[in-house]
Image (cartoon, rainbow, N blue to C red; front, side, top):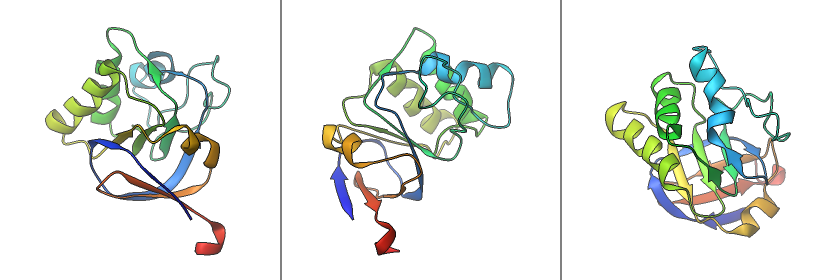
Length: 151
């Protein structure tokens, strides 16, 4: 089992699957279509990010280096949280940008969203984790990648 500790932006405990990209995530392009079309699931909508494009992000842990945001990105993130189609967790190897953080934090406060967000997990985190890995997130910001042998 590999273990990483980051800074908690919004706390929580969770266990599930990871969706991983080593590319910067344009949150607006990734989530806007799902929010605008009032989809039942958030599906990666940015064709420039082949790791996420077309994949169901709802209910998974989105593992990424950092994100790129525009002025309304926070609102889009808050909206997908309100719609209950957000990823279960956002796990950043680097620092989260302020606009994405604002959307996640406001969704937690205003929408009672249970979305978890942890940043500063370190570059080794993205080297260690792969899409479909099972992970466990703890309230203190610890992220554990569960080896198949540990089950």
